[in-house]
Amino acid sequence: MAIRSASQMLSVSNTFLQSLRWAATRSFEENIIQNVGTQAKIINGNVLAKQIKLEIRDEVQEWVAAGNKRPHLTAIIVGDDPASHTYVRNKMKATEFTGISSETIRLPDTVSQPELLKRIHELNECSDVDGILVQLPVPKHISERAVCNAVCPEKDVDGFNIINIGRLCSDLKALVPATAAGVMEMIKRSGIETFGKNAVVCGRSKNVGLPIAVLLHADGIGETKAGDATTTICHRYTPPDDLRRHLAAADILVVATGIPHLIKGDMVKEGVAVIDVGITRIKDPETGKAKLVGDVDFEAVSEKASFITPVPGGVGPMTVAMLMKNTLLAAKKEIDYNF
Image (cartoon, rainbow, N blue to C red; front, side, top):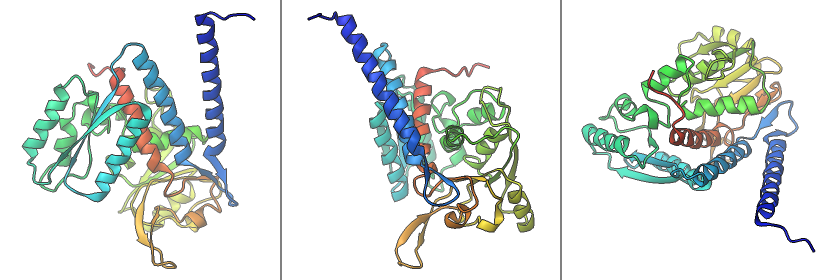
């Protein structure tokens, strides 16, 4: 009986692990797109996000095995908003899954703006911290813009600092806002063509709608590897008739308004790809119970769309996954902020 050397055994082990990873990835890829009896293919954000987090976990393991410090994310939450605490818990669970170390700093809603900015500055100066996020919203007596700009761009894993936003708009590599990055990742991994297509973004928020529009329309050969689509932004002051006209021409529709069921089936064309970012808790008129819905009338629009994301289980999990990706990117210091 042949006796294998340690190096041979290691090679076999690595090959076996690679096979397992390939099989797992193949399984996830087969489940990302689901058909449920409608025309539209349903993009499963939960499955896709898990696949991305597995990829990140592998990268973290390789990074640490090469002798580097384990990536570390620090979250700051101000006040007792239940939704904010839920979001932070989900992010911390994702750090545990991907092998990123983390901590949460909880501050009372009475904390002053100077006190909060001082804590952020201390984290900026701490070499053990790679990524910093301040859960929004913050209390009204604190300036959200001041907080976002206080996080140094190199550790700004939310991508909200004006340096990262400016780099994104200049088609330079940046820490991209996680929801916008998640939307583009869904589009790319689902095989939705953007080059030369008409894209419409409903919603112009600085943290979601604007960066999504930038990533859809910018040059694909630039550092952001954007979509090369002809992109239109609609918002609360877009006249209803104009909104319908823009939607009727959209090949790709991203909706981030926070208005439940704003987009109806008769407003979109056949074959449109729909990404629903909105999520609102409403009372179900049939059951009387609370339920989560998106900005798109899912049942009606899915009869005409080629692709559509569900709510919940669509963009939400992708936001968390891309936050982990930003944390790893920040730890590796691959972005040159010196120009």
